[in-house]
Amino acid sequence: MPGVATMESELPVEPQSLKKLSFKSQKHALDFFSPLHGHIPPPDPESKKIRTSHKLNLEYGAITTQSRSNSKAGSEGQGQKPSAPSNALALPGPENARDPHKAVSENVLAVGPTLQAKSTMDGFSSKSSTAAVLSNPSSERNLTTAAIMERIPSKWPRPVWHPPWKNYRVISGHLGWVRSVAVDPSNTWFCTGSADRTIKIWDLASGTLKLTLTGHIEQIRGLAVSSKHTYMFSAGDDKQVKCWDLEQNKVIRSYHGHLSGVYCLTLHPVLDILFTGGRDSVCRVWDIRSKMQIHALSGHDETVCSVLSRPLDPQVITGSHDSTIKFWDLRNGKTMTTLTHHKKSVRAMSLHPTEDAFASASADNIKKFNLPKGEFLHNMLSQQKTIINAMAVNNDGVMVTGGDNGSLWYWDWRSGHNFQQAQTIVQPGSLESEAGIYSMTYDVSGSRLITCEADKTIKMWKEDENATPETHPLHFKPPRDIRRF
Image (cartoon, rainbow, N blue to C red; front, side, top):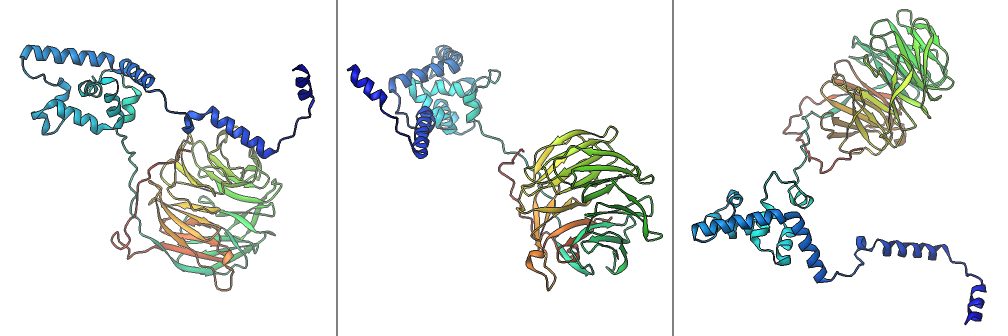
Protein backbone atom coordinates (compact mmCIF):
# COMPACT_ATOMS: atom_id res chain seq x y z
CA MET A 1 0.00 0.00 0.00
CA PRO A 2 1.33 3.47 -0.74
CA GLY A 3 0.61 4.77 2.74
CA VAL A 4 2.66 2.04 4.37
CA ALA A 5 5.55 2.67 2.01
CA THR A 6 5.54 6.36 2.91
CA MET A 7 5.46 5.59 6.61
CA GLU A 8 8.39 3.21 6.31
CA SER A 9 10.48 5.69 4.35
CA GLU A 10 9.90 8.36 7.01
CA LEU A 11 11.17 6.15 9.84
CA PRO A 12 14.62 7.23 11.14
CA VAL A 13 17.59 5.11 9.96
CA GLU A 14 19.13 3.22 12.84
CA PRO A 15 22.91 3.95 13.13
CA GLN A 16 25.10 0.89 12.70
CA SER A 17 28.20 0.15 14.76
CA LEU A 18 31.68 0.19 13.23
CA LYS A 19 32.07 -3.53 13.99
CA LYS A 20 28.86 -4.40 12.15
CA LEU A 21 29.86 -2.28 9.15
CA SER A 22 33.30 -3.89 8.96
CA PHE A 23 31.73 -7.38 9.09
CA LYS A 24 29.36 -6.38 6.29
CA SER A 25 32.25 -5.09 4.19
CA GLN A 26 34.24 -8.28 4.83
CA LYS A 27 31.27 -10.47 3.85
CA HIS A 28 30.76 -8.42 0.69
CA ALA A 29 34.44 -8.82 -0.22
CA LEU A 30 34.32 -12.58 0.41
CA ASP A 31 31.21 -12.93 -1.74
CA PHE A 32 32.80 -10.87 -4.48
CA PHE A 33 36.08 -12.84 -4.49
CA SER A 34 34.48 -16.19 -3.62
CA PRO A 35 36.38 -18.23 -6.25
CA LEU A 36 39.61 -17.33 -4.44
CA HIS A 37 38.28 -18.52 -1.09
CA GLY A 38 36.56 -21.71 -2.22
CA HIS A 39 33.02 -20.63 -1.24
CA ILE A 40 31.62 -21.25 -4.72
CA PRO A 41 29.76 -24.58 -5.16
CA PRO A 42 31.30 -27.18 -7.49
CA PRO A 43 30.47 -26.58 -11.19
CA ASP A 44 28.20 -28.72 -13.27
CA PRO A 45 30.11 -31.86 -14.47
CA GLU A 46 28.78 -31.54 -18.02
CA SER A 47 29.90 -27.90 -18.39
CA LYS A 48 33.26 -28.75 -16.84
CA LYS A 49 33.70 -31.53 -19.39
CA ILE A 50 32.89 -29.19 -22.28
CA ARG A 51 35.25 -26.52 -20.94
CA THR A 52 38.12 -29.02 -20.51
CA SER A 53 37.68 -30.53 -23.97
CA HIS A 54 37.65 -27.06 -25.53
CA LYS A 55 40.91 -26.17 -23.74
CA LEU A 56 42.55 -29.43 -24.79
CA ASN A 57 41.50 -29.01 -28.42
CA LEU A 58 42.73 -25.43 -28.37
CA GLU A 59 46.16 -26.33 -26.98
CA TYR A 60 46.85 -29.82 -28.32
CA GLY A 61 44.44 -30.20 -31.27
CA ALA A 62 46.99 -29.98 -34.08
CA ILE A 63 49.53 -32.24 -32.35
CA THR A 64 46.90 -34.86 -31.47
CA THR A 65 45.57 -35.01 -35.04
CA GLN A 66 49.09 -35.38 -36.43
CA SER A 67 50.06 -38.12 -33.97
CA ARG A 68 46.86 -40.07 -34.68
CA SER A 69 47.40 -39.91 -38.46
CA ASN A 70 51.06 -40.97 -38.06
CA SER A 71 50.19 -43.96 -35.89
CA LYS A 72 47.34 -44.98 -38.25
CA ALA A 73 49.61 -44.83 -41.30
CA GLY A 74 52.30 -46.83 -39.50
CA SER A 75 49.88 -49.59 -38.43
CA GLU A 76 48.39 -49.89 -41.94
CA GLY A 77 51.85 -50.11 -43.56
CA GLN A 78 53.19 -52.76 -41.24
CA GLY A 79 49.95 -54.71 -40.65
CA GLN A 80 51.11 -55.36 -37.12
CA LYS A 81 50.50 -53.98 -33.64
CA PRO A 82 50.52 -50.15 -33.90
CA SER A 83 53.72 -48.62 -32.67
CA ALA A 84 54.15 -45.52 -30.56
CA PRO A 85 55.10 -42.14 -32.04
CA SER A 86 58.76 -41.67 -32.82
CA ASN A 87 59.11 -39.21 -29.94
CA ALA A 88 58.02 -41.89 -27.45
CA LEU A 89 61.09 -44.02 -28.22
CA ALA A 90 63.28 -41.38 -26.62
CA LEU A 91 61.88 -42.14 -23.17
CA PRO A 92 64.18 -44.36 -21.10
CA GLY A 93 63.09 -47.53 -19.29
CA PRO A 94 63.17 -51.29 -19.79
CA GLU A 95 59.41 -51.48 -20.44
CA ASN A 96 59.80 -49.56 -23.72
CA ALA A 97 61.00 -52.64 -25.54
CA ARG A 98 58.05 -54.74 -24.39
CA ASP A 99 55.09 -52.39 -24.68
CA PRO A 100 55.83 -48.83 -25.83
CA HIS A 101 52.25 -47.64 -25.28
CA LYS A 102 52.23 -48.83 -21.68
CA ALA A 103 55.65 -47.37 -20.97
CA VAL A 104 54.75 -43.99 -22.44
CA SER A 105 51.45 -43.80 -20.60
CA GLU A 106 53.20 -44.71 -17.32
CA ASN A 107 55.71 -41.93 -17.92
CA VAL A 108 52.87 -39.50 -18.52
CA LEU A 109 51.21 -40.46 -15.26
CA ALA A 110 54.50 -39.95 -13.47
CA VAL A 111 54.74 -36.35 -14.67
CA GLY A 112 51.98 -35.12 -12.39
CA PRO A 113 48.31 -35.27 -11.52
CA THR A 114 47.34 -32.43 -13.87
CA LEU A 115 48.00 -34.40 -17.06
CA GLN A 116 46.50 -37.54 -15.60
CA ALA A 117 43.27 -35.73 -14.88
CA LYS A 118 43.27 -34.13 -18.33
CA SER A 119 43.83 -37.46 -20.07
CA THR A 120 40.90 -39.13 -18.28
CA MET A 121 38.49 -36.26 -19.04
CA ASP A 122 36.68 -36.02 -22.36
CA GLY A 123 37.54 -39.63 -23.19
CA PHE A 124 41.14 -38.78 -24.06
CA SER A 125 43.29 -41.85 -24.45
CA SER A 126 46.79 -42.16 -22.98
CA LYS A 127 48.17 -42.06 -26.53
CA SER A 128 46.81 -38.56 -27.18
CA SER A 129 48.00 -37.26 -23.82
CA THR A 130 51.42 -38.75 -24.60
CA ALA A 131 51.51 -36.87 -27.85
CA ALA A 132 50.61 -33.72 -25.93
CA VAL A 133 53.58 -34.08 -23.57
CA LEU A 134 56.06 -35.22 -26.19
CA SER A 135 55.21 -32.42 -28.58
CA ASN A 136 57.57 -31.00 -31.14
CA PRO A 137 60.08 -28.70 -29.42
CA SER A 138 59.61 -26.12 -32.16
CA SER A 139 55.97 -25.65 -31.13
CA GLU A 140 55.24 -22.76 -28.79
CA ARG A 141 55.56 -23.62 -25.08
CA ASN A 142 52.33 -23.01 -23.25
CA LEU A 143 51.63 -22.24 -19.62
CA THR A 144 50.39 -25.75 -18.77
CA THR A 145 53.60 -27.52 -19.73
CA ALA A 146 55.70 -24.77 -18.14
CA ALA A 147 53.87 -25.31 -14.84
CA ILE A 148 54.54 -29.06 -14.98
CA MET A 149 58.25 -28.77 -15.83
CA GLU A 150 60.68 -29.24 -13.00
CA ARG A 151 62.14 -25.99 -11.64
CA ILE A 152 65.94 -25.74 -11.78
CA PRO A 153 67.26 -24.66 -8.35
CA SER A 154 69.29 -21.44 -8.31
CA LYS A 155 73.04 -21.99 -7.90
CA TRP A 156 74.18 -20.02 -4.89
CA PRO A 157 77.97 -19.68 -4.47
CA ARG A 158 79.42 -21.84 -1.74
CA PRO A 159 81.21 -19.73 0.90
CA VAL A 160 84.97 -19.82 1.35
CA TRP A 161 86.09 -21.29 4.66
CA HIS A 162 87.45 -18.69 7.08
CA PRO A 163 88.99 -19.40 10.48
CA PRO A 164 87.08 -17.97 13.46
CA TRP A 165 88.23 -14.72 15.04
CA LYS A 166 89.12 -14.30 18.70
CA ASN A 167 89.77 -11.40 21.05
CA TYR A 168 93.44 -11.16 22.00
CA ARG A 169 93.78 -7.70 23.54
CA VAL A 170 91.68 -5.22 25.53
CA ILE A 171 93.02 -1.66 25.80
CA SER A 172 91.74 0.69 28.52
CA GLY A 173 92.56 4.36 28.83
CA HIS A 174 89.60 6.44 27.68
CA LEU A 175 87.17 7.86 30.22
CA GLY A 176 84.13 7.80 27.93
CA TRP A 177 82.54 5.88 25.07
CA VAL A 178 85.05 5.24 22.28
CA ARG A 179 83.33 6.56 19.15
CA SER A 180 85.87 6.50 16.29
CA VAL A 181 89.07 4.83 15.09
CA ALA A 182 91.56 5.21 12.22
CA VAL A 183 94.78 3.33 11.35
CA ASP A 184 97.98 4.95 10.14
CA PRO A 185 98.83 4.00 6.49
CA SER A 186 102.28 2.78 7.64
CA ASN A 187 100.45 0.27 9.92
CA THR A 188 102.49 1.21 13.02
CA TRP A 189 99.89 3.09 15.10
CA PHE A 190 96.19 3.86 15.29
CA CYS A 191 94.15 6.65 16.84
CA THR A 192 90.82 6.63 18.68
CA GLY A 193 88.36 9.42 19.50
CA SER A 194 86.15 9.30 22.54
CA ALA A 195 83.29 10.97 24.39
CA ASP A 196 85.88 12.16 26.93
CA ARG A 197 86.82 14.78 24.25
CA THR A 198 90.33 13.37 23.69
CA ILE A 199 92.12 11.67 20.80
CA LYS A 200 94.57 8.97 21.84
CA ILE A 201 97.29 7.46 19.66
CA TRP A 202 98.24 3.83 20.37
CA ASP A 203 101.02 1.54 19.20
CA LEU A 204 99.45 -1.12 16.95
CA ALA A 205 101.85 -3.94 17.86
CA SER A 206 101.95 -3.55 21.65
CA GLY A 207 98.78 -1.55 22.37
CA THR A 208 100.63 1.03 24.51
CA LEU A 209 99.55 4.67 24.64
CA LYS A 210 101.86 7.02 22.73
CA LEU A 211 100.05 10.38 22.77
CA THR A 212 96.89 12.15 23.95
CA LEU A 213 95.53 15.14 22.01
CA THR A 214 92.97 17.60 23.40
CA GLY A 215 91.11 20.37 21.65
CA HIS A 216 87.53 19.27 21.03
CA ILE A 217 84.83 20.26 23.51
CA GLU A 218 82.39 17.43 22.67
CA GLN A 219 82.67 13.75 21.78
CA ILE A 220 84.72 12.89 18.69
CA ARG A 221 82.74 10.91 16.13
CA GLY A 222 85.07 10.82 13.12
CA LEU A 223 88.79 10.33 12.47
CA ALA A 224 90.91 9.98 9.33
CA VAL A 225 94.67 9.81 8.72
CA SER A 226 96.13 11.14 5.46
CA SER A 227 98.37 8.83 3.42
CA LYS A 228 100.07 11.75 1.60
CA HIS A 229 100.65 14.24 4.43
CA THR A 230 101.46 14.10 8.13
CA TYR A 231 97.88 15.15 8.85
CA MET A 232 95.10 13.67 10.93
CA PHE A 233 91.51 14.94 10.74
CA SER A 234 88.88 14.81 13.43
CA ALA A 235 85.22 15.79 13.71
CA GLY A 236 82.82 15.86 16.63
CA ASP A 237 79.53 16.92 18.14
CA ASP A 238 80.93 20.44 18.72
CA LYS A 239 80.38 21.22 14.95
CA GLN A 240 84.16 21.44 14.53
CA VAL A 241 86.35 19.72 11.94
CA LYS A 242 90.05 19.96 12.78
CA CYS A 243 93.28 19.20 10.92
CA TRP A 244 96.14 18.05 13.19
CA ASP A 245 99.79 18.26 12.18
CA LEU A 246 101.38 15.14 13.68
CA GLU A 247 104.87 16.63 13.50
CA GLN A 248 103.87 19.43 15.85
CA ASN A 249 100.96 17.54 17.55
CA LYS A 250 98.65 20.52 17.33
CA VAL A 251 95.71 21.86 15.32
CA ILE A 252 96.82 23.84 12.27
CA ARG A 253 93.43 24.28 10.50
CA SER A 254 89.75 24.27 11.38
CA TYR A 255 86.89 23.92 8.88
CA HIS A 256 83.81 25.98 9.83
CA GLY A 257 80.44 25.54 8.19
CA HIS A 258 78.47 22.73 9.81
CA LEU A 259 75.35 23.89 11.63
CA SER A 260 75.23 20.90 13.97
CA GLY A 261 77.27 17.91 15.14
CA VAL A 262 79.56 16.21 12.60
CA TYR A 263 79.01 12.43 12.57
CA CYS A 264 81.39 11.12 9.89
CA LEU A 265 84.34 12.10 7.79
CA THR A 266 86.58 10.59 5.14
CA LEU A 267 89.41 11.64 2.82
CA HIS A 268 89.43 11.41 -0.95
CA PRO A 269 91.97 8.72 -1.98
CA VAL A 270 93.55 10.85 -4.73
CA LEU A 271 92.63 14.52 -4.32
CA ASP A 272 93.35 16.80 -1.35
CA ILE A 273 89.69 16.88 -0.42
CA LEU A 274 87.87 16.10 2.84
CA PHE A 275 84.23 14.97 3.14
CA THR A 276 82.22 15.49 6.33
CA GLY A 277 78.61 14.60 7.08
CA GLY A 278 76.53 15.68 10.01
CA ARG A 279 73.24 16.23 11.74
CA ASP A 280 72.44 19.20 9.48
CA SER A 281 71.65 16.62 6.70
CA VAL A 282 74.46 17.95 4.49
CA CYS A 283 77.69 16.36 3.28
CA ARG A 284 80.29 19.12 2.95
CA VAL A 285 83.33 18.97 0.66
CA TRP A 286 86.44 20.85 1.86
CA ASP A 287 89.72 21.81 0.26
CA ILE A 288 92.28 20.63 2.82
CA ARG A 289 94.84 23.40 2.34
CA SER A 290 92.71 26.49 1.71
CA LYS A 291 89.97 25.52 4.22
CA MET A 292 87.40 26.52 1.59
CA GLN A 293 84.10 24.68 1.27
CA ILE A 294 83.91 23.38 -2.32
CA HIS A 295 80.38 21.93 -2.20
CA ALA A 296 77.54 21.47 0.22
CA LEU A 297 75.90 18.25 -0.98
CA SER A 298 72.32 18.72 0.18
CA GLY A 299 69.49 16.32 -0.58
CA HIS A 300 69.12 14.07 2.45
CA ASP A 301 66.20 14.65 4.80
CA GLU A 302 67.94 13.41 7.94
CA THR A 303 71.39 13.11 9.52
CA VAL A 304 74.23 12.00 7.22
CA CYS A 305 75.89 9.35 9.37
CA SER A 306 78.16 7.48 6.92
CA VAL A 307 80.25 8.59 3.95
CA LEU A 308 82.52 6.71 1.51
CA SER A 309 84.95 8.06 -1.08
CA ARG A 310 86.58 6.43 -4.09
CA PRO A 311 88.76 7.66 -6.96
CA LEU A 312 86.17 6.96 -9.71
CA ASP A 313 82.57 8.04 -10.17
CA PRO A 314 80.61 8.01 -7.97
CA GLN A 315 83.38 9.58 -5.90
CA VAL A 316 81.11 10.26 -2.92
CA ILE A 317 78.54 7.86 -1.41
CA THR A 318 76.51 8.93 1.61
CA GLY A 319 74.15 7.02 3.90
CA SER A 320 71.59 8.74 6.07
CA HIS A 321 69.02 8.33 8.82
CA ASP A 322 66.38 8.88 6.11
CA SER A 323 67.17 5.27 5.04
CA THR A 324 68.55 6.28 1.63
CA ILE A 325 71.99 6.04 0.03
CA LYS A 326 73.00 8.74 -2.44
CA PHE A 327 75.69 8.79 -5.13
CA TRP A 328 77.04 12.27 -5.81
CA ASP A 329 78.52 13.95 -8.86
CA LEU A 330 81.56 15.69 -7.37
CA ARG A 331 82.03 18.06 -10.32
CA ASN A 332 78.56 19.58 -10.20
CA GLY A 333 77.70 18.84 -6.58
CA LYS A 334 74.45 17.09 -7.51
CA THR A 335 72.87 13.71 -6.85
CA MET A 336 73.57 10.99 -9.43
CA THR A 337 71.52 8.13 -7.95
CA THR A 338 69.42 7.51 -4.85
CA LEU A 339 69.12 3.95 -3.50
CA THR A 340 65.96 3.35 -1.48
CA HIS A 341 66.38 -0.35 -0.67
CA HIS A 342 66.71 0.06 3.10
CA LYS A 343 63.75 0.66 5.38
CA LYS A 344 65.73 2.05 8.35
CA SER A 345 68.72 4.31 9.04
CA VAL A 346 71.89 3.48 7.09
CA ARG A 347 74.45 3.97 9.87
CA ALA A 348 77.38 2.07 8.38
CA MET A 349 78.83 1.41 4.92
CA SER A 350 82.05 -0.20 3.72
CA LEU A 351 83.81 -0.44 0.35
CA HIS A 352 85.38 -3.72 -0.72
CA PRO A 353 89.18 -3.23 -0.99
CA THR A 354 89.51 -4.83 -4.45
CA GLU A 355 86.04 -5.24 -6.00
CA ASP A 356 83.81 -2.49 -7.37
CA ALA A 357 81.15 -3.09 -4.74
CA PHE A 358 80.12 -1.89 -1.32
CA ALA A 359 77.91 -3.03 1.53
CA SER A 360 75.53 -1.01 3.66
CA ALA A 361 74.11 -1.94 7.05
CA SER A 362 70.81 -1.04 8.61
CA ALA A 363 68.64 -2.46 11.38
CA ASP A 364 66.49 -4.24 8.75
CA ASN A 365 69.26 -5.97 6.79
CA ILE A 366 72.77 -5.82 5.32
CA LYS A 367 72.79 -5.30 1.57
CA LYS A 368 75.41 -5.49 -1.16
CA PHE A 369 75.48 -3.13 -4.14
CA ASN A 370 77.49 -3.04 -7.32
CA LEU A 371 79.46 -0.01 -8.48
CA PRO A 372 79.42 2.32 -10.32
CA LYS A 373 75.69 2.03 -11.12
CA GLY A 374 74.52 0.84 -7.72
CA GLU A 375 72.73 -2.35 -8.80
CA PHE A 376 71.43 -4.32 -5.83
CA LEU A 377 73.23 -7.68 -5.55
CA HIS A 378 71.71 -9.50 -2.58
CA ASN A 379 70.95 -9.41 1.11
CA MET A 380 73.08 -11.22 3.65
CA LEU A 381 71.73 -14.65 4.49
CA SER A 382 71.05 -13.91 8.19
CA GLN A 383 69.67 -10.99 10.11
CA GLN A 384 71.57 -9.49 13.03
CA LYS A 385 68.35 -7.83 14.28
CA THR A 386 70.00 -4.93 16.04
CA ILE A 387 71.12 -1.40 15.20
CA ILE A 388 74.41 -1.85 13.31
CA ASN A 389 76.80 1.03 13.96
CA ALA A 390 79.95 -0.13 12.19
CA MET A 391 81.21 -2.50 9.52
CA ALA A 392 84.49 -3.33 7.77
CA VAL A 393 85.74 -5.62 4.97
CA ASN A 394 89.27 -6.96 4.40
CA ASN A 395 91.08 -8.39 1.36
CA ASP A 396 90.24 -11.99 2.32
CA GLY A 397 86.53 -11.30 1.94
CA VAL A 398 85.74 -11.27 5.66
CA MET A 399 83.12 -8.67 6.45
CA VAL A 400 82.36 -7.86 10.07
CA THR A 401 79.46 -5.88 11.54
CA GLY A 402 79.09 -4.57 15.08
CA GLY A 403 75.79 -3.86 16.78
CA ASP A 404 74.36 -1.85 19.64
CA ASN A 405 73.93 -5.00 21.73
CA GLY A 406 77.61 -5.98 21.54
CA SER A 407 77.13 -8.60 18.82
CA LEU A 408 80.01 -9.04 16.38
CA TRP A 409 79.02 -11.01 13.28
CA TYR A 410 81.48 -12.24 10.66
CA TRP A 411 80.34 -12.78 7.06
CA ASP A 412 81.75 -14.31 3.90
CA TRP A 413 81.64 -11.47 1.39
CA ARG A 414 81.02 -13.55 -1.76
CA SER A 415 78.11 -15.66 -0.57
CA GLY A 416 76.74 -13.58 2.31
CA HIS A 417 77.05 -16.52 4.71
CA ASN A 418 77.36 -15.67 8.40
CA PHE A 419 80.15 -18.01 9.61
CA GLN A 420 80.69 -16.67 13.15
CA GLN A 421 78.68 -14.80 15.77
CA ALA A 422 80.71 -13.36 18.65
CA GLN A 423 79.60 -11.36 21.66
CA THR A 424 81.83 -8.75 23.23
CA ILE A 425 82.35 -8.91 26.99
CA VAL A 426 81.99 -5.64 28.87
CA GLN A 427 84.79 -4.36 31.09
CA PRO A 428 84.39 -5.24 34.79
CA GLY A 429 82.46 -2.48 36.50
CA SER A 430 80.44 -1.58 33.38
CA LEU A 431 76.77 -2.28 32.82
CA GLU A 432 75.62 -5.04 30.48
CA SER A 433 73.89 -2.36 28.42
CA GLU A 434 77.31 -0.82 27.71
CA ALA A 435 78.23 -3.61 25.31
CA GLY A 436 77.62 -1.52 22.19
CA ILE A 437 80.18 -1.36 19.37
CA TYR A 438 80.42 2.12 17.86
CA SER A 439 83.26 1.92 15.36
CA MET A 440 85.63 -0.63 13.84
CA THR A 441 88.37 -0.94 11.27
CA TYR A 442 90.91 -3.45 9.98
CA ASP A 443 94.58 -2.63 10.00
CA VAL A 444 96.33 -2.20 6.62
CA SER A 445 97.14 -5.93 6.34
CA GLY A 446 93.57 -6.95 7.16
CA SER A 447 94.76 -9.48 9.75
CA ARG A 448 93.79 -7.50 12.86
CA LEU A 449 90.45 -5.94 13.72
CA ILE A 450 90.05 -2.99 16.09
CA THR A 451 86.66 -2.29 17.71
CA CYS A 452 85.65 0.76 19.78
CA GLU A 453 83.05 0.10 22.44
CA ALA A 454 80.70 1.68 24.94
CA ASP A 455 82.49 0.20 27.97
CA LYS A 456 85.34 2.72 27.31
CA THR A 457 87.67 0.00 25.92
CA ILE A 458 89.30 -0.78 22.60
CA LYS A 459 89.37 -4.47 21.70
CA MET A 460 91.62 -6.15 19.14
CA TRP A 461 90.73 -9.36 17.29
CA LYS A 462 92.63 -11.77 15.07
CA GLU A 463 92.11 -15.14 13.39
CA ASP A 464 92.55 -18.32 15.39
CA GLU A 465 95.79 -19.93 14.09
CA ASN A 466 94.89 -23.40 15.39
CA ALA A 467 91.51 -23.59 13.64
CA THR A 468 91.08 -25.97 10.69
CA PRO A 469 88.06 -26.90 8.53
CA GLU A 470 87.84 -30.11 10.58
CA THR A 471 87.72 -28.41 13.99
CA HIS A 472 85.40 -25.62 12.77
CA PRO A 473 83.37 -27.07 9.88
CA LEU A 474 81.36 -24.89 7.56
CA HIS A 475 77.62 -25.24 8.19
CA PHE A 476 76.10 -23.80 5.04
CA LYS A 477 72.66 -24.44 3.63
CA PRO A 478 71.93 -22.72 0.28
CA PRO A 479 68.98 -20.36 0.58
CA ARG A 480 65.67 -21.55 -0.81
CA ASP A 481 64.61 -18.09 -1.84
CA ILE A 482 66.39 -14.75 -1.70
CA ARG A 483 64.59 -11.47 -1.18
CA ARG A 484 65.32 -9.49 -4.33
CA PHE A 485 64.87 -6.08 -2.73
